Length: 171
Image 1 (cartoon, one colour):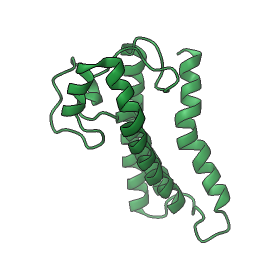
Image 2 (cartoon, rainbow, N blue to C red):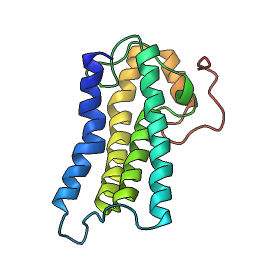
Image 3 (cartoon, rainbow, N blue to C red):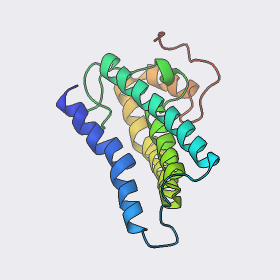
Image 4 (cartoon, rainbow, N blue to C red):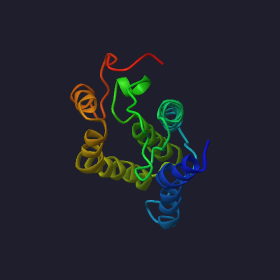
């Protein structure tokens, strides 16, 4: 793993999954919205485990594809990968890495029993939806041309397809 990838991980998922949630827990301590700590019921544990497991799988799988098939670069917008990846989870949904981050944020909300962290997950989802539509997707269209446009027309941004998009190879 190169220094650019480490930097991208520390800045992007680090901010979304660690720095902001820690700040929210700290800012809401001693309030009605304070995190209550570890789950005290089965629902909390199941939610944390299921969302956390799914999020972790999507994040790791996506990062491995970026590192092995991306042709250099990172997931960060300031150092984008060189190759269009339409493999693995990208055959079902256009943003599996961010979906993984959002699922993991929901898991954190379940685990810490924190409405502010859940609110951050919702805000993060909305923020990324706007960012992708207005900035990232037009840049990807310019960078990859017709193959990306066709991919975008056939693979949803957030809700996965029921079958794999045949535009990529098997992983």
